[in-house]
Image (tube, rainbow over all chains, first blue to last red; front, top):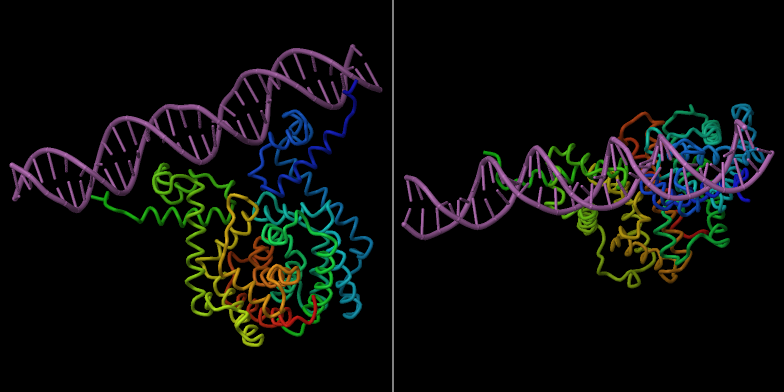
Length: 207
Length: 207
DNA sequence: TATTATAAAACGAACGTTTGATTGTGTCAA
DNA sequence: TTGACACAATCAAACGTTCGTTTTATAATA
């Protein structure tokens, strides 16, 4: 009376795995722990994905799709940044950065950015984001440099880490704040910061 | 003819473990791998430290001592920031931030900051840094706020992530740069950035 | 009656740790 | 000066546990 096509257990696994990977990392999380939390049998991960590693890829690709889909509301990835004026491009980039804050601090994707940061060094887990590539192209255009120019890369780094700083140091910041996650007030502070400093960084006074 | 008091193998283990923990994380590194890289027998970690976890603590505490020792050249941890004028305190903080860049980008401690960032969420691996506490107190003094004020905490976050951004996203940045580690030129860019933006962040125009 | 989803059990491999033996070194009484 | 002894360092081997995965069986559905 309950053995029908039940995508429910599949999504429960995804949810449990995402939470645990973010908390304890890929290697620190056993599939037994995931399955216990998701309330499913031990074999279900292999059954649905083929293995633990494929489950990870599934989670990440899911995020990337969401990111691309979400970016469509404020970016046109097919439009060549070099065909846009510097001023318009700057405005677009600033808007994109603000939208990134919204994206990275929703419940859905907050765990995922933590996972990506944690596992970024695994050669087998490399992720290519077309959205990130496009943003880099925009920075290059604004600075009138090559996309692989050292200055462009560092400007991107400073921007991204500025946005993600609370997620990069979650244990540190949340422990001091005495919270389990960031609240609306925190996100507003981050956004305000983005508007102010990212703007300055982009406008290329130095660096 | 070679079995004498040989602290050599102990330090070789420390070096190998630091490199591997930074690369693959604590859980992703086996003691077999560490010992193989250090060219010592499998039992030596238990012999010297008692276990893998204790080896980790040994590494981290080693870093903290170095950090405290190093900070003495530009900070007096016993001096109460609230007894210093805002202007002098700002200058001291800026200097400290620049010194932090030097510290975090030397070969000795670059791996260690990566490890700390990776393992920060483990409740059993929590590290308290008196230097960081002092810097927080300085920020609070400059902003004339309580040390636990949300604004103080976020300013610290933004400052620290600004400094560490290239270390926070090492895979991302180094892959694009096509380098194995940051060079003098990169560190100069980071320092210049610190001077410019940290200064703006501290001076409290907003956030 | 296929097909899909779940369950329990078992697989070999890898893990961190411990054991017991062995080797070199420094100490010291004879 | 030497032989015995304590001790620190190292070794190979084995320990029990946990890991990701697979297998075989079973229940529910189309």
